[in-house]
Length: 141
Length: 109
Image (cartoon, rainbow over all chains, first blue to last red; front, side, top):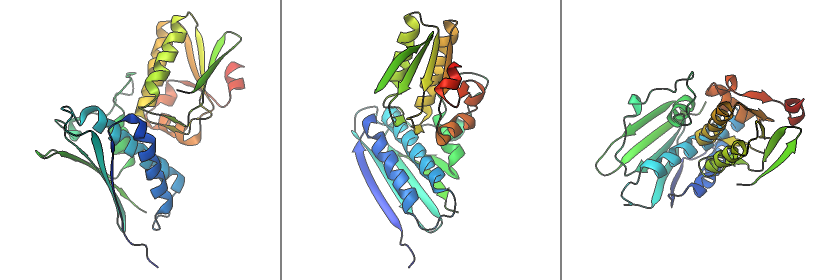
């Protein structure tokens, strides 16, 4: 029987202690989806990582006025793609304006968006008055 | 953060007893490494055998430690990386920066 779509709506307090919970959900999804012929352990790590990175950004920058003390994540698995959306209320940023890390310089930070872009097939960040949305899409091959 | 340190010869070995090195605990590691160098130790080895997940914050804490080592004329080596963790070093080219060894024994050898 063909697997039906899966939709998850998650709200967790905007605290880093919940990163591992969100990461584990990503790993479980990688082991649960039917239509994937690649390496599931690699996909599990990748989903754990992009969820961890995106949630960390939402905690750090996404709630400057303490308007909302939670992070909202939606995960939607359709036939050939997996969509992850992370919502935030920060001032937002231009995701295409962030340069890749300079590999010759040893910086302590600045690798998070690079990792997300490297591991996902499409990454967009939409700034809206009502809140910003980071959307990450992974094709399930 | 759950870690133990031991001195083997002249090297301080940090054994990270955490499954994840991420934005939740990486600043603790950063402080611990800084403290070790401030105490006058020169050579540090971080054993990552129990770490099965690392994010950009975890990588950043190790980079910070590496820079700390250089500033103190010391060394910071890594050992026992799990395959997925190692792939993060390769993706960010940090495998060219760190001396990475398969085991603690080989790092100390």
